[in-house]
Length: 268
Image 1 (cartoon, rainbow, N blue to C red):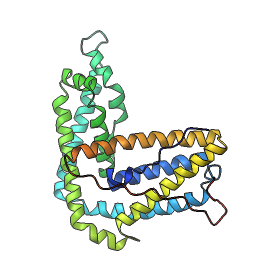
Image 2 (image 1 turned 135 degrees about the vertical axis):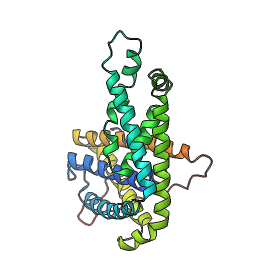
Image 3 (image 1 turned 180 degrees about the vertical axis):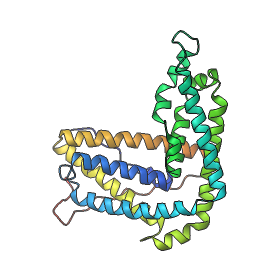
Image 4 (image 1 turned 90 degrees about the vertical axis):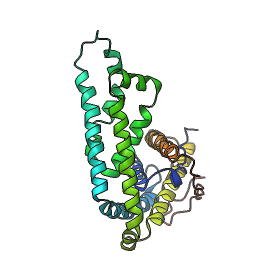
């Protein structure tokens, strides 16, 4: 019996639409890379691709309404702070390995390199990624390194600007959401639920195939998607923490897989 892929039920409440879309696209790409037919995902994969396209249309239309002056100001601020944080650290790599600050530069290497260029990403994706960076830099070692290098205030300003950008986008989204929903094939929540339902079905299917007839392809798919699950769990946890004492929405029930008309039925 192989490793099982964690069913991503937590997407029901913990992530923004942009983050869910990003997760869905990356998960689908991981399945395609290993072969939808090999993973017994031919029918589910086709439905998932269609659902992702419809959801992306709604999210992109929503994003177009977010281009207000408040959003632009907050986005420009966080871009500036993100560049300042990264490039300040990057220049410090030039100090000698014997300098007392060199170990602190090295401590931050993996986090800084992982988020290089985040300022050039789509606004909602940048929001999610900066939340991930904030969580990654929250360890005692990284906090100490930032302080020792004099970068702690820049980091704090960056994450405050990210909060402001996120709040501005959500405020504008609330005001304009009905206009975007009218143009999409369904409401944004409906399209999101369709995507997450199919992601759960895909995970169940791959788990079942891997349990009965494990292959390198199923193992690779599970490994890649499991890594994505862990990445977005961190983002969801950070988002929940930021909401303070607000009660979390009830999680959506996990749907049972259904037989596919082309014979691509669930493995039991």
